[in-house]
Every structure is written in C-alpha cells, then in structure tokens.
Image: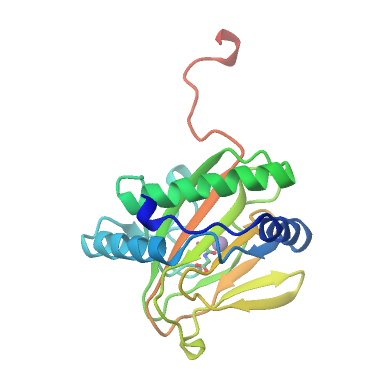
Length: 216
Ligand code: OGA
Ligand code: MN
C-alpha cells in the first residue's frame, strides 16, 4: 500500500511524542497516519457502518461486555485487517508500537482497533481505558477521520492532565496517544456525526491458553 504510506515524522518528533506520553500521560501523534490513509480508512468505515456490520458500543469487550448508554453513546466496528486501508493502518500502528517500545520500554505486544461512529448527540463520559494495575490496555490511540471539524460542533476529546482539561478537536488525521491506565478523558457531546479509530496496545495475550503452562 505505498500509495497511502505517509511520510513518517522524524526522530525528534517521535522522541517528543514519547516524552509527552511518559511525562504528561498523553501526546499528539498527528503526523503518524497520513491524510491519504485516513481518507481510505474513512471510506472503509462508512461502508462498514452502512452495511451495519457493527454492534452498539458497550463498555468493555466480549466477556465483560455491558451496554451502558448512560456513559457511552456511539457505534463500534472492529478492524480485522480485511481491507487494504485497514492493513495499511495496522502496519503503521505496528511501526509506532516498535518506536514506543524502543523509547519507553513499555513492552507493548498486542493491538486491537475499532471504528467508532458518534451520531449527533453522541458522547463518552469521563473514563480511563483500563483499570489501574490490570496491565490490560496500556497505551490508547485515537485517530480522527472527519474531513472538517468546526469547534462549535463540540465532540472534542477532553484529556485531563491531572485535573486540567485539555481540549482536542477531532480534526482530520489528528491522533492522540494516552496511557490507558492513567489518563482520564471524555468525548464531549457532538452536534455533528463524528468518526474515529479507537485502538489500544496491550501487554498480555488475549488468547486463552488451552495447554497448561507446565506442559509447554
Ligand atoms: C474511547 C475514547 C476518544 C475519542 O473510545 O475509549 O475515549 O476522542 N475515544 O473518540
Ligand atoms: Mn477512552
């Protein structure tokens, strides 16, 4: 997928990103996924949502899935790499994983990602993406796929730097990294349909082992 491979930010930008992530609990990663890739992802996401391959968003996943519309109002469609835009995205995310591990020794291992569509009136109340100490989701990534965004539309990501709210417009190809266990954030109610990729790196395996460890 050379056609949608972005120009990567230089070493200094990556170091600044890693420093912000470790120091402030979050960082902007705006240059990492290029505009062409984001356009392809948007098309793929809209096709998926139109085909209604998605499910209403809950809080948590699979076993601990509970649908709670009081805290989260959006629709999700999980990425499986089955589209060229998705595989290009997964490759870029993998390159970012290696850079973050190299700089921060996070030991990030697995990645999961979904498209998240917030209709008008959608929001996600203040939360962390992982329970502290669970070492489940370690670094969160959000990538915005909205061709234009007017601040008056709301829908901002509000990141809490300690208790100080910092507002990020979900503007095209903007991206944010957060420490999943540390950084509280919310999605302000949106007055315009809002599309993003929400993704996480984990340190544990999600696969349940059938073979006892002693037998390996
Ligand atoms: C999430 C989330 C933020 C955003 O999906 O967990 O916090 O800006 N998303 O979409
Ligand atoms: Mn979140």
